[in-house]
Amino acid sequence: MKNLLLLAILSFVPLAFSQSRVEFEHKSWDFGKIEESAGVVSHTFNYKNNSSESFVIYTIGVSCGCTTPRWDKKPIAAGEKGEITLIFDPYGRPGKFEKYAEIESSQGSIRLIITGIVDPKPRTIIDDYPFAIADGLRIADRSVMLGLVPRAELNVSSLQIANNSDKPLQIAVVGDNHPNYFDVRAAKETLQPGERSEIRIKFDTRTADLWGAQDFVFSLIVNGKETDGFVGVRGIVVENFKSLTNQERINAPRSEYSSYFYHFSTQPVGAKLERDFKVTNSGERDLVIRYLDYDKDKIDVQVSKKTIKKGETAVVHIVLKNTDKTGMITEIVRILTNDPEQPVREIRLMARMAQVENIAN
Image (cartoon, rainbow, N blue to C red; front, side):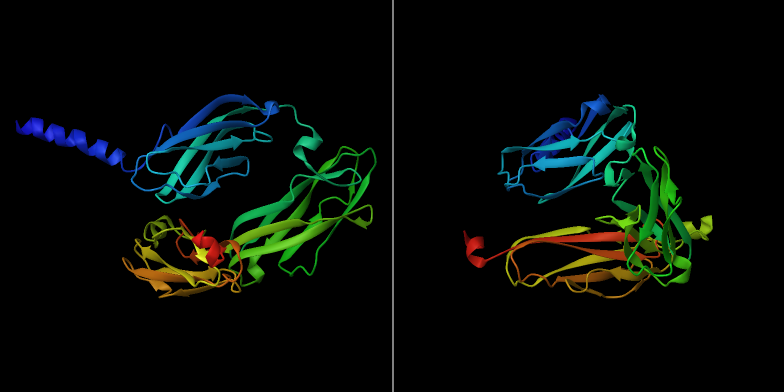
């Protein structure tokens, strides 16, 4: 009799739990083999709101610009169904892929995953260098992302270029007041018809005391004429951990965050919007907040302490200052620490500012 009672309880608990959340038919989808030349593919994830409250999707972040989410912008009432469609563009992405969409919602974070294999088409210069500049010069991208850049190190990257004309091209680079630790120049001054080359980029953090996001821009000169538009370069300068031994990495600090995102929803213009985030050190050695990277004109950030002992927690208090106009606000605070596994963490805050009468309606 006791065993039957226990079995009944165990059978009931998962059912009760499943009825209290949003339930997806599935959270991953494999496209199998798709042709790059066939263009975009999509899959729709269906779900039902089994909770007792409306389900609201605040935003959906994706792991790649090749993936576009579409979803119901209106709240999904209790007991109702909704759908999220992920659109994948296979252009320029041959081979296996795994992309995810991170849903930030009223019920927390939900991850959807799409996978597959892209069968590539034959490549041309236009395929590999999609951006036309001038006189047949084409480039691979309009931006160069350096990623995490260690301090006290020479970092080298490049932008790929090609001559798609039937005449030689003279190539040069111009930038506005680049600092001495940033250098960009053409690998070859003359590019023959059909020839491919690169723009070489050097970012030397050995000669500058830098932390956080660093942005640079430059333009290209083709046959003596400066072209329209510019190329952006971004790197996030973090602590250099390359000298750490294996034991030092084992004993290193570990940062754990209470959350990475908060949506204030719709708020009246001029409202004071503030939020606390907690940073806990679960490692062995002191966790040190090296730098707080944010737009000081739009955000105010205060931290309760910058050195966090083992097992202790610091509070990061963030206030949005640009709440005096209607529209969407999206701001980011980057927290840089001496955690080698997670040297930088972005905290994102969002809000929709509206006039009071519009909120009431």
